[in-house]
Image (cartoon, rainbow, N blue to C red; front, top):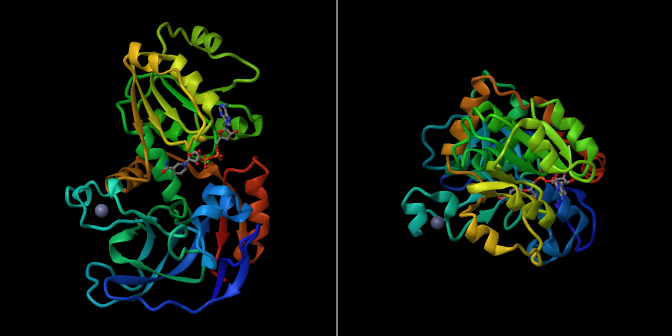
Length: 342
Ligand code: NAD
Ligand code: ZN
């Protein structure tokens, strides 16, 4: 079968023939329909420092998908051949304290699909049944291919109460834009979304009623004044991974404000900790998605009217994966989908 493989320790990705997997006990075999490209895949494609230190080579990469079950491994119950499924890209141990307590997103031995083990950019993939999310057939199939990043957005945006609150989202990448849309859907009063890239802010405007701010052109004090906000944001969602954006957020929070941080910061990012201390801020790090509470909420929000479809901006056949990666690298795209159905 075809697969997109990180074959060499250098920039690029290679379309290769690999052996079709056989599902082991407790696994299902999924025929992939659509996959989405994540920023992580782009880092692996570019072969940055993190990728060089993390990714075993050769390996099929990718972790965002929707597909159909075509075979059940021994002992798999409650799933059927023909089921439309997406899946959790974090494989957890099931044995550590957090796993046993039902906090699987905090497993101390999490393995990433397409990062620490074989990924899903291939025609077929074998995954543990416990990682499978059964799709609701009334929603468009394509949306399920981005449930992984949508889940990052949902996990972050729903970490703190947003009903009636003023929310600052820093970073209008696909995840930041989806998080802003979720905060609005969940009843936030004002959602202010910052970026330094106008293409991204234009895309954000298609997704909801946010006050978008290019922080190179406007400052947040003026925006707060315009909105009639006197004391700062109640909730902050850090989605840029940029130290300047994080510090800007800390500077514009209300006393006692709550910050959920998804963006992955450079190791040399510094903050003025005394602002956190004296202003009584709460900061929560977010990793992955809650299994499976976040998945449940995502599906429910889509069924109750949340529309995230404009975030998908590019679609290619998997053999044109290079065009997909170019679109991601342009900094102008939303989510990019690769189709594996023909
Ligand atoms: P992305 O790179 O597409 O988006 C980041 C956005 O931040 C870009 O549009 C960029 O222009 C913007 N930005 C850069 N500097 C800024 C600044 N000073 N102020 C405001 N915006 C600024 O990333 P994404 O795919 O949307 O993911 C968002 C972040 O979440 C990334 O840092 C990613 O690595 C991280 N992430 C974390 C997890 C996790 O489990 N913790 C999972 C997925 C992604
Ligand atoms: Zn565990």
